[in-house]
Amino acid sequence: MRIPSLAILFAALLAVCNLSQAAFSQSTDPHNVHLGRNERGEVVSADYSGSGGLRAARLHDYPQLESLYVSYGLTLTADDIAYLATVEQLKSIEVGFAGASGEEVKIEADLAPLAKLKRLKWVHLSKEQMQDDDLKFVAALPELEYLEFRGDTNPWGEKGPVVTDRSVDYLSRASTLKHLLICNAAHLSDKFVEQITRGVPGLEHLDVDSPDLTDESLRLLATRCQNLNWLDLSSGQITDDGVRHLANAKNLEMLWLRSAALTGSCVESVAGLKKLRHLELTVPTVDQRGVETLAALPKLEILALRRPPLTDEQFARFRNHPSLESAFLNGSQLTEKETLATIAALPLLKYISFYGNERLEGVVGKVLAQRSQQPSVERE
Image 1 (cartoon, rainbow, N blue to C red):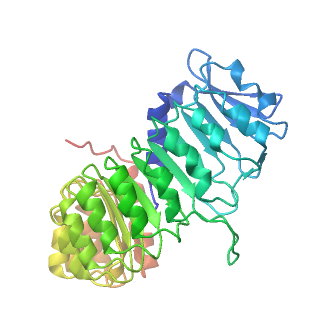
Image 2: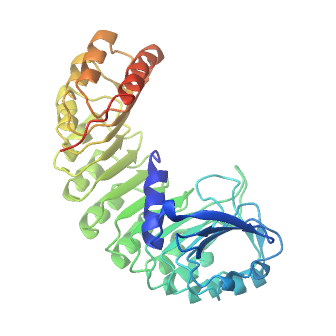
Image 3: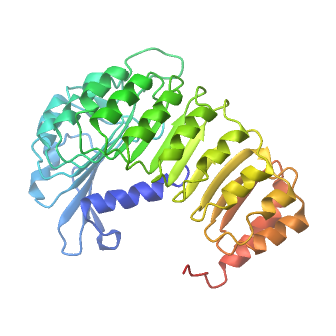
């Protein structure tokens, strides 16, 4: 579902680089490099948006540099990659923006030299014409924890190089990997998941959308990845049987599953996942028992249940929930009086959207806005 991930991922990046947001000050050098400094005035991050080449940016002048961002739309040459591979203190590199089409970087070189960056923990790669062998360097990174890339960067409807199951020959050797996010991954299948779960059993976070993933992928993840706490999958072949496998993934905190094949029956499978904080299920209907199951999840903070229209009685089951902060629900059958009564009994609720009932959403939005002006409720 990719909703509040930006804040989470940014927090993770700060942890990886051991930086403090409050400690940054910004400056720009003559080579279109924006520099971030810590409280001691040391340059710890660089944002490159120039055209003179990375070598001209003189990154070696900053011995404490840990994080580099290369702006999308640029072109990196073989010399750029060769020079980048010598900045060995880097812990984080972000090339382009993997979350949106058209925000890639053109790279006119093999990425193999990047294998020299042994301290890398975070790699975010959005490269034009991305293909399997572009990921070969990943296998040589002994401390890599976070990897995000676009599997298909071809313009809509056009054919060209893509990332396939063969890429897992490299990725499965990155044994320290914890977070793997692949946008536009239409050419990955259960074979990819089979090998990545075998090679990287410590995986904690997987985000993949591919029509070829089936229930077998969920079984493999639940069986092999005991530390799995964040799963975001989209495939029309995922069914209720697959969700039942996830009942064994007791450490799941974030579960986002999108499939037209899911039914309300799968809701019962999450009953034992007491650590769940974020949940999205694209089920068309949900019965009273299913709603009670969801309302009983003690740590649930975000719920996305956009398709099934809830009744007043069902929505009321969430009253006095100890953690719910945001909800994305079908409110086409809800009435204003009962809805406001439920909202009043959800002290931590900050945001809610009601699909199919914009008027009610507006009324509730005003109530929540007024509530936000009052002293916040502290969790025990």
